[in-house]
Length: 331
Image (cartoon, rainbow, N blue to C red; front, side):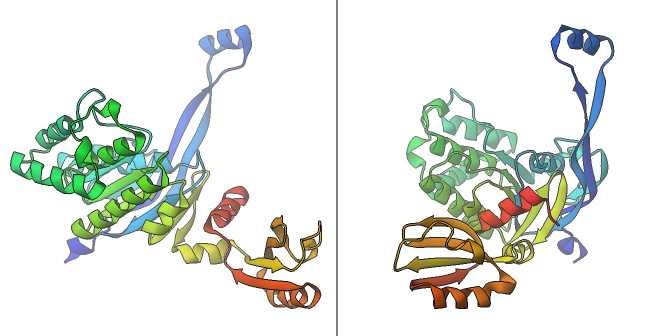
């Protein structure tokens, strides 16, 4: 019973610091760099503590350079932490124990594991041999995954002949061929069109339901996070700013409501500025952010002073909430 309750991932004060050489420009700077190098400390991840339960899907959000990929590499054992502790599926990741490696996968949207000049099937056969999967079982998994991802017709084509969407689906298929319990997904839909993104999300949902897998997902596409994640963690400059559900993120970091207006006459320049932060004003339509504590007062004034055809109030789009978190670095 105790083992069943153990978190899939547990990190405490996890940190990663790099020493980066600094070089002055010009010939003199180059010579000094050879003779006496100067270094600065770069804190990629700072004392992050969190746990992830078995079967959870967690979105991992942050701008470029926030420390997301560094964290995933520490959790998957590719990097040794500078300090702190981490346990994944009961193992210390950087020890790279074979039993640990058989239970995880790391998918990076900008990296590939398929052999460029070989057909997809040949790479899958290699994976089957590495993970000691019986040929009959390997064929069964190949058929099932290919049907779910709708790529049965391209398995005999060399990887270099595939489109980006086809290649990413094949990469995902190869990464999950050994039925891992824990998926680290770093931008798995990077560069894909809308249809391919939707297909990848469907596949991940079905895989999680069928295998009870745990997913930690980074993405710049908020649609990925909203479609898959039950919980989000926001990281900025190496520090964990938020850990909770999506709706809680909006409540905590956005003190505004979004008001959309449809007016009888075109919006005049500056006409709405005193009511809130105008995000868009085009023709007879406008969208602005209004402080929550002023919402009732502002809506009443708008209805009294403007000829309003339609008015709606909602939470701001999640993308805008996240953008404010990143730009202000608030906790």
